[in-house]
Structure formats: structure tokens, C-alpha cells
Image 1 (tube, rainbow, N blue to C red):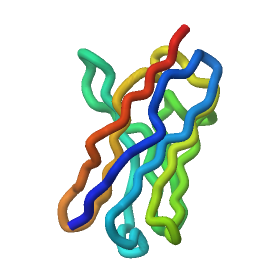
Image 2 (tube, helix red, strand yellow; image 1 turned 180 degrees about the vertical axis):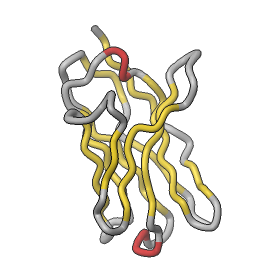
Image 3 (tube, rainbow, N blue to C red; image 1 turned 30 degrees about the vertical axis):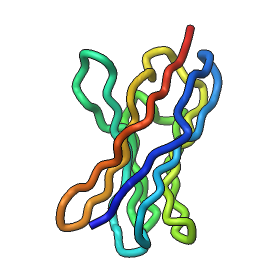
Image 4 (tube, rainbow, N blue to C red; image 1 turned 60 degrees about the horizontal axis):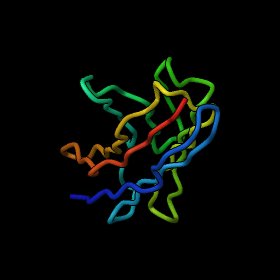
Length: 114
């Protein structure tokens, strides 16, 4: 099992940047897959980005070139750096970790004003 706690959300103007963090309750060295999803009001949850223990990353087309996912194994934390934010990026961002089951954090709100 692992507990995940997100932080770093907030309100930012369009074109701005924000970094959200996902702190795990245990070493993430043994967690191969960690990533982020987001859910906007009235919309389905959608994949944002994933990072594997190998360092391989994948991104949704809608954020490619603007968002960067990374993991700091020493801090047991995964980050999502979001640049050139758009109003359509407004959502609750939740991190997840894949072990025997999939574990989720509680989410952090990101609001981008136009």
C-alpha cells in the first residue's frame, strides 16, 4: 500500500506556470508507474502524464510540449511542471501509483483564469 498526497495547486493566469507535487508515504523506488490524471467539472477523468522507474514518460496530446512529469526518488515525490497554462487546463489533478492495485491521491485544484 501507499498513500499519496498532492500539493501545489492554485489559481494562475493563462500563460502562467504551476508545479504540482505528489508525495508518497513510502519509497517510490519499488513503484514502477506513477502519473497524473485530471478531471474538469462535468467531464470525464482524463490521462495527463505518466513516468516509469526507467525514466520513460508519456503525455496526453493536449499537454505535450507544455507539461513535464518527473520523479525524485530521494524525496519519494512525483512532480508535474505545467507551463503555458490554458483555461482548459482547469481541473482537479490527481496522482496515482500502480502497485498490485492502483492508488490515488485526493487531488489538488488547478484553476487557470483567462
